[in-house]
Image (cartoon, rainbow, N blue to C red; front, side):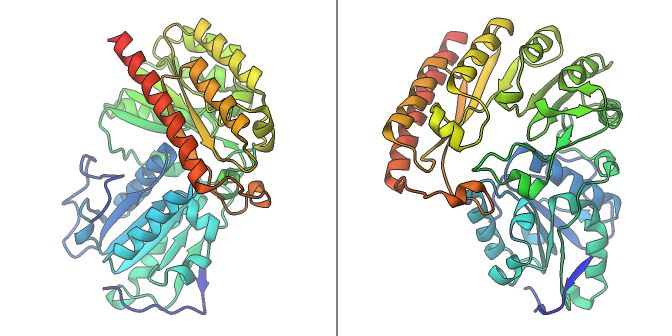
Length: 406
């Protein structure tokens, strides 16, 4: 555990609704009223939602009282996202509003900004990285040693290379019917705009035996629906078990009623996966396959590893093999160097593929990524125009698909 020897703390004197502990099992009333109350707030993707469950489970097991009411919390933990600038801005705002005596930033922003967080927001007391969340109970115990909940020094812990698998087995879930199960952590792709490899590390696939144990434990607890999670689930491989084989193994688990997975990288997606999806009777026929851009020139600059034609062929094969399968995507507009023609290429892909849904984002510079070396030359107004055009197109397609399916 690292201590920042130069920074001393002073006493600490409406929560957004991204994450709620209200429906969690075994939360309130299990510890004495003198115990510190902890409020966990999540920003970002499903991986962060699962991480917040892990954090809550570890703290619950360590005897802390978890609260769904931010105003009653002595300790506030912000589990952060650094994928987009807007997500970070929400975190800084939340820190500013917090009235908790002890405030901690964990997750992707912790890895991205490390000790500089203390300089930017002096009221933050501890910073804990994505691979270090298992240390949180020990860190909070260290904080409790100081009378009045006041630290003499600030604590940061961001250097772990991997997580111990045992942190996933606390049995803590927010939903009594559905559970997220992480199958891999980190990413090897290094897309030029993406901060994930820098904040979550290189790809690490969990032992499939541990994954199966977690799923079976969930089933014993009455949870019969799961979602397999990874930054790139298709890249999963543990010994001789790859993702396609894992789907077959999970599908055969007794007591499991339904499962799905996110997210897939097109360059690692295969016909074999589509065949496995069609064959697995418990698997939801849903594929989230981010294209990001319909321009070959921009895809190359993004280091995505595939072409427009490759993606279109893949989407066609998916729709042919996986009967009535839903297909969704992510798109970034305004990437450095994106011309009107590049944008039109993307617009045409959305129009022709007819995704069931799409998540459209305006490019923003992310620290440490290769894209920071590029000139962010698409004006803000142009990014907003392109974003609005594709968003409206996708909304129209989604409405038509929903109307035809009803």
